[in-house]
Amino acid sequence: MGITRRGFLQRGIATTALLGANVTNATELFSEVKKIPSASHYGAFYALVQDNKILDIVPQEADGRPGMLKALVDQNYSNSRIKYPYVRKSYLEGRKNNQFLRGNDEYVRISWERALDLVAKKIEETPRESIYNGTTDGWAHPGLVNYCPTLAGRFFNIVKGGCVNPDGDFSAGAALRTNPAIVGDIEVYSLQTAHEQILENTQVYILWGADLFKCNKIDFAVANRKNDEYFFKYRKSNIKFISIDPIKTETAKMLDAECIKIRPMICQHFMIHRNKYV
Image (cartoon, rainbow, N blue to C red; front, side, top):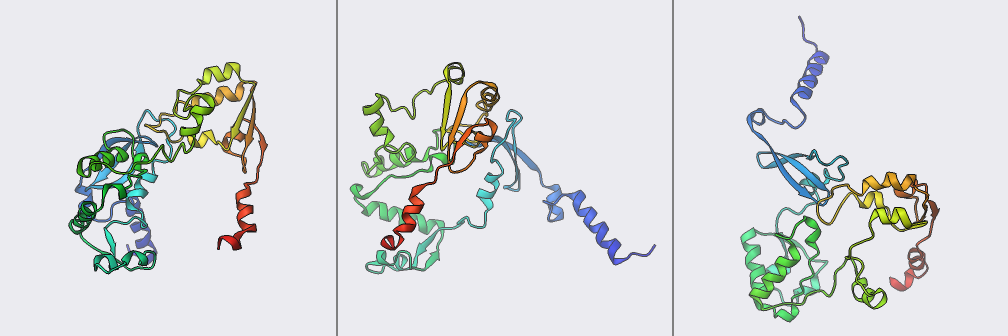
């Protein structure tokens, strides 16, 4: 039987589909794919790992409504991720007043060992009053064992005898300082009203710039989707929902809320006064 060019290509495509798109060479067929359990703010998952590379992220059985788990693969292998340490050329060369070249300088790739030496030297020569521990990497993972702000604080307390720490946090903002004087409590991190109490005692529920359906895809710890169960109860209740938001959110659609579409004035203000800002 003769082999035509079309037939050869068709058989080749079919064979590739059977082997799987992730197989790029024959040796991968004999390499074990490990199923490693883990968890994140997006939910509990399994990482499928082969030769120390993540092939895929799949939700654990307990997660019936997985969120943005696939983003974890992109975070590791995105083309925009900086994979090696780089240093400004003028800083590396020790030029005087090199700080004025920030934003216009050339970057030079260096080894991890060199990068650690440069950081250690800079920390050693910098007074503790000039070191600001302003890391916001606590949302990079759940748990407190490797909580970045705490680790950085402990490090500077031991090595430098302290540093300048933020007052409050970036998430709650001024509420941490103003709320106790207004309502007698910090409120933002206090125990919130239970869903059952809201369902039993609420007549009007206002969603102010809040899309609960999307927000519940993540959690401060490990997302468990337990809040999702109450959306059905809210929808069947007699509560009137009002959504104040520039767009009609998924939550507003789901709860058939009255929508008040506000127009953020800061954008208009910026356009009117753009010349002054420039």
